[in-house]
Length: 260
Picture (tube, helix red, strand yellow):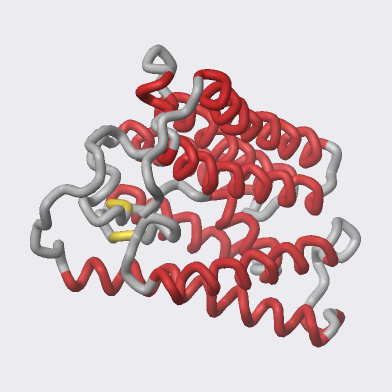
């Protein structure tokens, strides 16, 4: 665990500014989707995801909440996350027709509304930092849909499953904060994201409907990595759900709302 350090106000403001930059990345994801550039849109969503993954640990390390008590970083983070993790990927689904036309508006509505429920749910995290339900990371879902070139009918099933698991308390791992299998999860996550970034880069709008036969062998291998990484992340959540809650331990983490 990182040693707690009290930040100076200017450092605390800089950390908040870093968090705020995620909103700009989400907005650029919207603009580039509107410009019909799936590559740029998905890459901006990944930039927002990296910012979201880093800002929380940094803010906790420097005790930003106690330095700037008038600014609620948790609420700021939730607002940004709803744009970058929900609205931008929902718009991406609409613009690039990842769902069948007849189901598109219904699917997007389910994504937006179920995510509102999730972001309002006060019991979103367990004591050991798992999510109670799918944490509305639709930016990752649409990235996987795109790089695996899944058919619209398959995407319908995926959307319905994840919407259901937003409400059903199947556990989902927080890759950074969960201690179970962390030494394996973080390297797998890094390789998984690198594989997705490579696939996003080569699958632009001209090859978005390309089948596996027209992909280079390296791309097919990268798709296998994406399959494996997805199974690992979901599998740990299933394992945690079946195991049940661990025995309570003495609190070692300061109380208060955790960043999403």
